Image 1: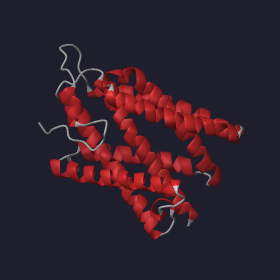
Image 2 (image 1 turned 180 degrees about the vertical axis):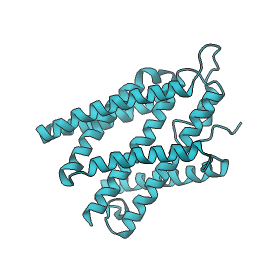
Image 3 (image 1 turned 135 degrees about the vertical axis):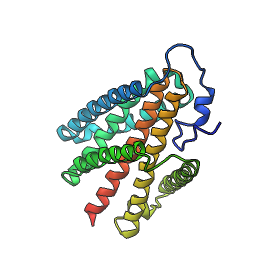
Image 4 (image 1 turned 60 degrees about the vertical axis):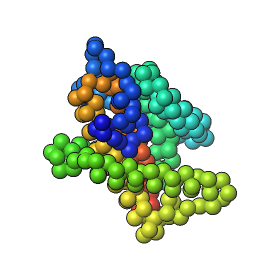
Length: 246
């Protein structure tokens, strides 16, 4: 069965295939929306806290940023391999990411006033636009579409990994940080690919509910969607910072 193909590493066909089909309660779209809303509230609360810490005492925010980033990564890895724990760990992931995003956002805001509000607005605007395009059938999650987005996302992931390794040797990849024409075009492409991931996430959630995935998959799917939203926000923030440097 090829229904559940997604480029989001936490929402894939194999995840649903291996899940036990329980006789009791099953995943619903409404339940997933409710859990995603709760996780967003947790993320925003943690972000507001670390944001406030930065503007009260900038030096004290770095442990929050680093701790949030590392904690979020560790929690994400555990959730991916122990998806039945998502109900317990997904809220913690939201809090960890909130601490990280709040600190990083404050750093950007200190340099370019108003950039964070723009990034948040564009992120949620993109989310709504992609949801409308998906629900109206303008963009369909066909097998070809999934394959293209999957390949593009994998390519970006490999590029970022290479850039991270090179940075250890003090070599910078200009496309990632450059505010020149090619640097901005690169960021636009990455933002576009991140946005297209939302289409695949919407399709995965809809198909999971239709096929009766276990109830805990509501938390797992919410976690997967949050991963995409966090990525999209960070890429939009990076793009706006490049435009402000021009």
